[in-house]
Length: 270
Image 1: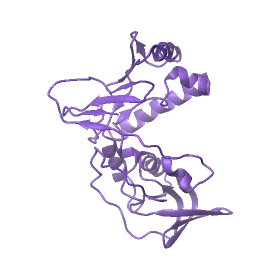
Image 2: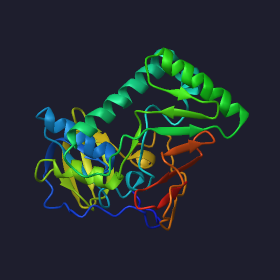
Image 3: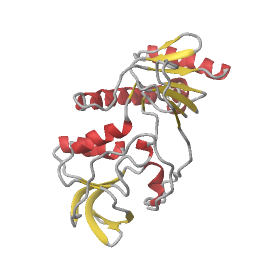
Image 4: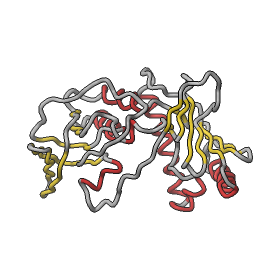
């Protein structure tokens, strides 16, 4: 996988570092050390399954450490659009699953300071089209048993929240078995043979039973048939202010605009 030049993230890198000699074999290899990879490692540990996580940089060096720390139910689209795209049953299943996942993470890390606050989020209508969709979303969400409220301009989602994303990744990584995480390991290729997958790591090879790619936008580098490519986005962090500008994490313009104010007064805008 080829690294790309990125600007400095707002969130500090996890302070822990992981390395050591790579094993020749592993039952399960996870490629990618973001929230997906470390969460998977955590769940596999709970099921008494040993896995090896390989990260080409440091943990949370990709999208998991380059976001505003929103913890949202569902997908990027509003609920009405998701129902139209996936169907009512599938959309309801996705929303329920993501809320349950939020519960699970909050429970697993309840005694760890990761900046988690289940304060709810709001979606602000930027256009008449979006306003109509948010009103419909509120009706559909309520009918499907979810908490939501629309006041004519804003859709309130009280079970959403916010978090320090790199702290969350770091906390889950600290719970992983010793020796299961290796940073600065560049996976260059995968070769599947019968019931094995050979993971090529520069001048070494690891024989794995299963390989799971938690590589987000970089997945096609190792699985060319998966047509995903990275797109540039940006987030601006403003200097702290001494008054409240926004009380809750806010989305607008179909998710293309968002902002959140930290307890320090810093405003994150994307």
